[in-house]
Amino acid sequence: MSEFNRNPPRKLFTLVFVKSRNRLLLGLKKRGFGVGKWNGFGGKVDQGETVIEGAVRELQEECGLVIPITNLNHLGCIVYKDVDYDREVHIFTTEIKEVKKLNIIESDEMCPKWFNFNEIPYDRMWDDAKHWTNYVLTDTKIGCYVFF
Image (cartoon, rainbow, N blue to C red; front, side, top):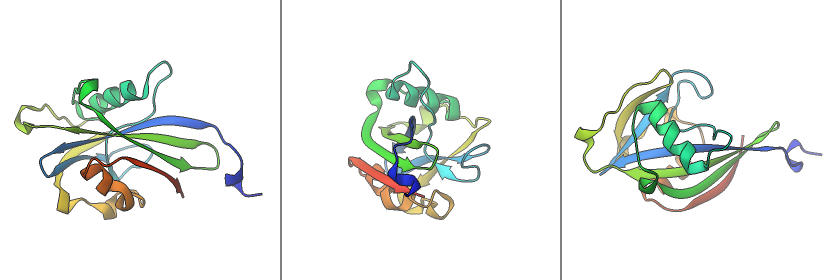
């Protein structure tokens, strides 16, 4: 029987992508899971926290942005199938009008940087990102399973 034919526990995660005009804010992971990769901002949803509350908290912790819950657009989720547990990653976007007024900071976990939509570093992101990031850029609903 395949390892993926059973029902492992599922853990909730968030991933927030910040956009401004034709630019996307990504963070370079500095430590822990995914070190050296560019990605959106997010992580585990804490116990007693909703998915959207977790998204807001993680965004603030990782790059200093404080975004009201009402400014987040939930695109859907990607389930990453793994042997030990599945990661249910809820994908959000937020659109920023005036970047100059933002207080984006580098945290001990992430180094944020703006990329033009046509310069996204897919070769330095998770392998699956090139297949679904266009949904983020166009605010299109998403739902899929990824098997590594």
